[in-house]
Amino acid sequence: MSNPQQLRYTKEHEWLSATDENGVATVGITEFAANALGDVVYAQLPAVGDTITAGETCGELESTKSVSDLFAPVSGEVVEANQDVVDDPSLVNSAPFEGGWLFKVKITDEPADLLTADAYTEFAG
Amino acid sequence: MTDAPRRTPLDALHRALGATMTDFAGWDMPLRYGSERDEHVAVRTRAGLFDLSHMGEITLTGPQAGEALDFALVGHISALAVGRARYTMICREDGGILDDLIVYRLGEQEYMVVANASNAQVVLDALTERAAGFDAAVRDDRENYALIAVQGPASPGILKAVTDADLDGLKYYAGLPGTVAGVSALIARTGYTGEDGFELFVAPGDAEKLWQALTEAGAEAGLVACGLSCRDTLRLEAGMPLYGHELTTATTPFDAGLGRVVKFDKPGDFVGRAALEAAAERAAQQPPRKLVGLVATGRRVPRAGYPVVAGGAVIGEVTSGAPSPTLAKPIAIAYVDAEHATPGTEGVAVDIRGSHEPYEVVALPFYKRAR
Image (cartoon, rainbow over all chains, first blue to last red; front, top):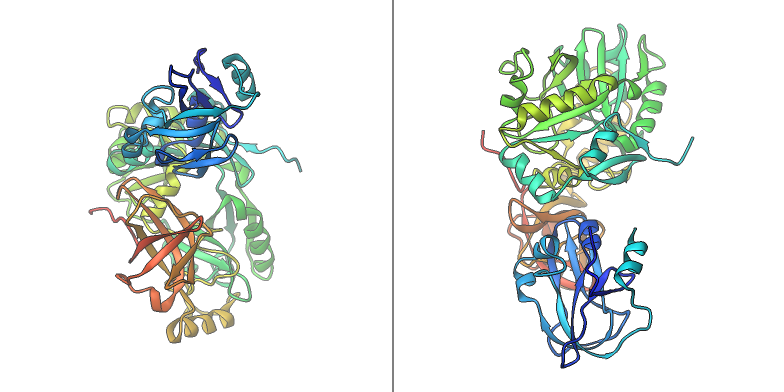
């Protein structure tokens, strides 16, 4: 699998896009994480308007065998949650870097230790 | 003793297929090859191929092998006809379940006991000890068998393509020796999926050849390799208990609603008889908790150990839970207080990490195949 170069990553296996002109970035989980989870059957995403804090849980993903917390990769305000994923959580498995994105956040603060694609690839092994 | 997980004779094949592996009862086993949901659906609608070589085979032979098993287990094993199999349990003196088992009668004086991987050593030790007073020998056959299962409605057709054995004459819970894809096998019509299917016990060195032959024979019918993840959701839908979840040393067969496996009317004493008679009476008079099915109205998935609640009080505990591919809803098996155990009971919820999610109480199983 390959992790897109233009994204940044966390050690909790989330990815973060570059911010747009409004300071909004898209968040998802990596293909590595999606494969490790197995079939995702339920996604509880943060609601629009929620304030999230980097490193804290902001939702959960349920798969056949387990439930995993979703960690906020950055701090900010949630401006959109992906309704397509709520309706069809398997998108997280089939297109983790594209249609399976989870939410968009207007960033107020971001941790200094976000990983580049190469560093994440090395980390995830 | 080493801590490294054991590998089945099919290990290299699983890796070549890209399986996600998991440590299960000390074995490195395939969890899934691709999507576990797709594997589940394949078994319900077509066929699936499983490596179950972690299961523990123990053989009893001798003039009193049947009597030894009648004493050691709760079932009336010596009454089995040659070529038939029986689901049974081995209990402690206090009635607690040590394991659930399938016993195959292979000959007049030969029986094969198949134990769960996690309990195989415990069962071997108990059988060895309990058979000591009988003219019977207990043999550890764990290293002598690989076990491959082909399960699903298309499985008879697939197996027929690679064997001349009389499969039509092979009833559910029966087994016969035969040749499959050129290798000697014990062909058993048993399984743990709620579907028609077969379990093939073969020499470890023959496992790969058999697996490949079944893969080829099943390709057209849509057979896929299946991991333990879908095996768990398949058995859960079929309402079949799993040791360590529904069955433990703290439960008796009667607690688990499986009192029918205990045969009090068989000749002679057996380990656990007195305690099990008391447990049977308790279950009939005032059952403590009963095993029920729960079906979600929402989408959050209950997991083993989650509390079952009603009216703000804890009334039970989930023993197994998963999203059901067939029902397209989360389901669970749970022990609940008898007063909340009647199907249709309202106001029952599962405490899913602090949030009380409503669940409907239903009778088990969740799924029964059309025959």
